[in-house]
Image: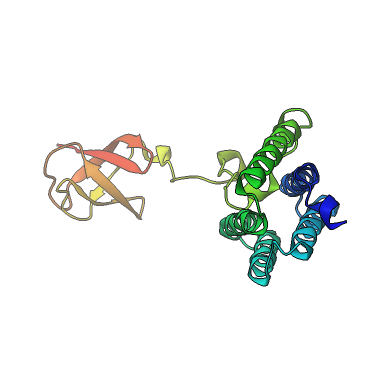
Length: 211
């Protein structure tokens, strides 16, 4: 059994199953069957290498830490936990193997099939990556939903009022007993001067003094 589990072909199959399982979990909001099968494949891999004397307790602890970090990724915001977990898993795989070249080839093959499944899930099945939804803001503040970046006071266009403060060129005016922040057309305007709104550009209200 140990010889079978440490066979390069079986190692490649186990790592591929693990990689595909982890990829499928990226499209799931919760830890499910695909993730369980992927973790089980990794456990079988480490069991065989541990029994063969290739993996020590330190390697097993690193493997367990990687699994826990990946598992925590489904409950924590951001992708830091998942990234550290994957890095710990890959490092533990190299430490558990007696042949660095062979495990490197097996990991590359597993990554290839994992990426293939990843693109198939997006392009063919039209799945959305749930993991990225936690770190990327997809909602937008739309005007139709009642969100506005500023109040456009086009209702003041053409109205007259009095300069409450000196405009140099910014200041405040009174229109129908309402205090409004305005800016003069360019020149200095004295306090209490009669002014008129000539332009409204979003929150910017431009006024001109009336002689």
